[in-house]
Image 1 (cartoon, helix red, strand yellow):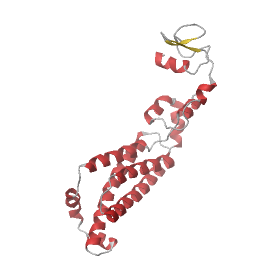
Image 2 (cartoon, rainbow, N blue to C red):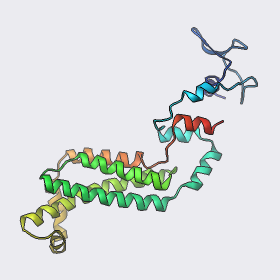
Image 3 (tube, rainbow, N blue to C red):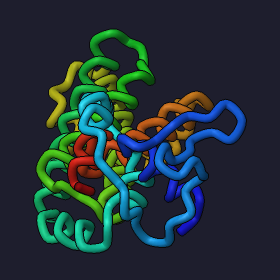
Image 4 (cartoon, rainbow, N blue to C red):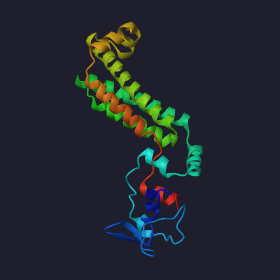
Length: 221
């Protein structure tokens, strides 16, 4: 067992001792940990678990490292991609509508709405999908970015409708879709890339099932 893994056990043990010169040592042997798979004198310090963070969520990459193969398989059986996909699409559509409404109402394209869209898509997928596999994060990122583009498109529809004194649905049915890309390119702002990137990142990050430090530690007991 690597020394870093051994120290993870020692930090939870009542027999640990902190030496100013050598770091954490065993109070019974006075030596650094040297066991192979498990320590025969290990005694769990209950206060260690009680003091762990039970609020902040652990990064998904760390979750995959800390969970055993058996635990990962158990949680993978509980994940539901179709539900996550449906929830993400609904959240993305609502976010795009919100973007369009805010942009048309204020007359400004507020990029921070893209961040809200990414978070909304990711959190919705997490709640309904309980995802562990990477496909959940990738899907969340794609939906978030596409929702931002849709929000921009709906904004254009809204501005055209107001300019021509037409209804939104009427404008949508009359528009020449071959002109959408040139129009969106013309109204493109370099900052859009930043906000779309953040939206995609949040769509990815928040799409996974989450655990706190305390929850992960309790699973390992």
